[in-house]
Image: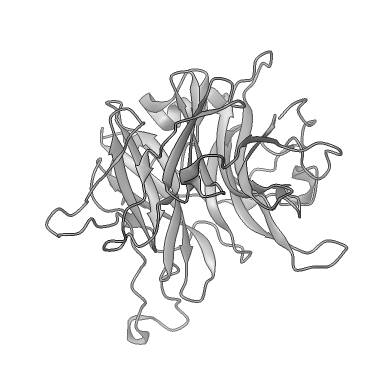
Length: 376
């Protein structure tokens, strides 16, 4: 099965003909018997022969500190197969965070990676509008009508930039979801957006604020309004909040409590229609403990509204401060990219953030990486 066929099978009616974004979070199940948060992974981190550099890292630079990836598969003019494109946060020479783009023909050998000497990912967005506050974060790429729409976070809220080729972007002058005065659980400016579309074309956005994840809606993707999953309360509630810490009396011997008692953030949404015809919203997210440890969790729901139901165990956990998940079809499986701690180099230091990759199904061994692409 080609990557396009796989993406269409996983995303159903929401898949695009030539450009498509992240897809499945596991097995489709049988009918609707399973909970909306079941059937994810398992993923395994990439091995040494599966990446051109140091496994499992696919994009790393101590000065740039690549973070918060967003993956999308795009067909580049003149090439037979789609490339995996990563948009990510990176630090420039002046220390300001902006957004860069890199791509790989196989989802592993990315333009400007450590082994690609003398090349760097292309910087596609910098903070140059008054409301942005001097730094950008949390890119989220979405294919819309032959364009790439890149949502991102800044000091004043969530912004949007649009592109025909995925390299040269034009920003909207104002945020599409503005920061508001702290209220209820939304105690910080919105960050880490993930945007998807409902079958009727409406846009939905999951975003992090404070310690929780919230939802917003737009008819055209250009201006969003906040949604309340529980209208019976006076405040707008999150669709996913941190878990309540377990009491010692509630745990079995050697059983660990919930992994996300401190914070939930960095949502990554995929959508499908179940065999029984129900809309299934599936969300990967960063779960953080009260002690600050992070892993990748999964939550879901049936239908277009209401709170998310979490899976009780993380779907990816390697103890390296993994966070900010994003996924895309590669070959016959799914590649998962996360921000992760990179150990210090030969010069010492404290280490730095970089982007690493994992793959499902975990039983499949990937062929050796292809050559680096000619352009980012």
